[in-house]
Image (cartoon, rainbow, N blue to C red):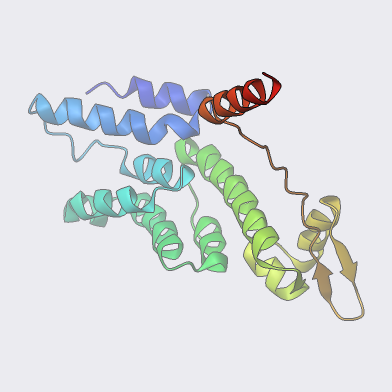
Amino acid sequence: MDLSPVTEALAVKSFDKIADICDNLMLQVASEGISFHDDWPYAIHLLGYFYVDDCDSARFLWKTIPTSVKESKPEVVAAWRIGQRLWTRDYAGVYEAIRGYDWSPEAKDMVAAFSDVYTKRMFQLLLSAYSTIAIRVLALFLGMTEDDATTYVVENGWTVDTASQMVTVKKQAVKREQKVDSSKLQRLTEYVFHLEH
């Protein structure tokens, strides 16, 4: 079984393509009738789904993993622990699951990249959901210490009130593009032409 496309994608840090590459390889190998379950990089495959925020596919993949693989490969179980936290929206638990396992060299960079992407997603969630937030809660959402979380959001323009231990969210200006479809423009042109003649 040739897993070189997966290792190449990992080497060049194309983590957003890992899930699709794994899916295609799995279909190819399964269609050829090759037994692949013992050698399949399930942990990488699961992490690939988490990286692109596809928990549904990760959940279905988990259900297809043989029990023998789940029992013999602790990294697969550790990857699924992240998925369980994502599924239940246990934001702080995601970071605990990431830090709670000593990842293999193949998975370490991908887990670190996922952690960064996840922190950015959480930041965007906080940005859209809150106007003020307690530093303690902010740190849980971002998976950081209170000092690191405060520094992170201050760098993004948020303001901190140390007396109340609250952070004021700086909302980004919403850019609205006015889109005019060609049919409306055509009707307007005809109307103006009619008025002039």
